Image (cartoon, rainbow, N blue to C red; front, side):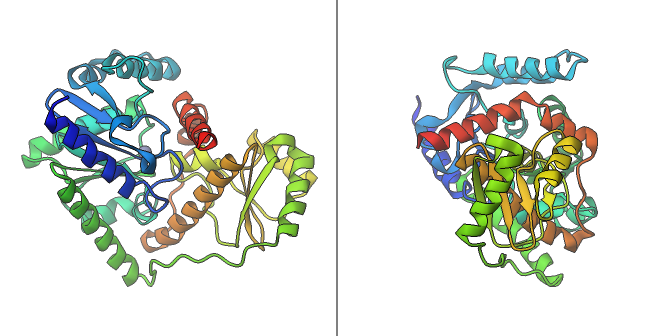
Length: 366
Ligand SMILES: [Zn+2]
């Protein structure tokens, strides 16, 4: 490895830790990358950003990655996503390495040496809102807004084309990409410029929210007692079995009304159950949605259930983050929910199931 690559990976691991906390991502979401002319190094799928070390990144050949742009896509969505995975795997320099992030092609689309992708609640307050596109044009005229696209092949192609068009029109690369109902991508040639760009974005949003009477404090009500948590877990367990083996709880807050980003669906499922659960209501939820809820919003608290403690914890984190997004979105006309086709694509997506699996297993191991 060259000195340039080694230094780049050390700087990249520092960025991963900085942008890897709960303020920026949920669970194993988000990613950072570093590129030289020939190689792109990125976080493996599902691994935790804030646990990355310089040798934990996977390296891909950039020329092989460009193959996604020329792929003859199968009309079958499932086969098409497998084709994308095959391109990614064939681009891996070490074939035994872990699976690279499905968002690798988006990192490749930008020429900047360092690229980061996160899902901060203040950013998603704008990207998940009804007036997000207009607000983005007003607040960030040098950024690129990307309408919602299914992650994987469609998003990679959409972003690749949008970045090319931006370059043609303006003669430079967009400073940042705001992905509707998803999150933020931004790039820079040095880690410090990357940090400064994010600080500017965060500050512009902070002052916009302040103008709408929303400060950046986020408080939930008092935590429900252990006894209450245990009795609620018992009710859920009787109705849905091991899917409620574990429970995590928070004080009350207003949850997002429905699916807002792929990560929220992966970790907390699309729809929270609203109101006090009992056996009949849980059964009705399962019939209607096809699966038990992960998040249950009651008057005295927000609860998350799962087959293990980490799944329940991630679900609660995603509900908390979704509550913050919901609150921020009031500054931009309220939440814009994902539609049924967008939601169903994520619910059936193998790439996302894999990511959750790695994240939960990673927690279990350490
Ligand atoms: Zn993402």
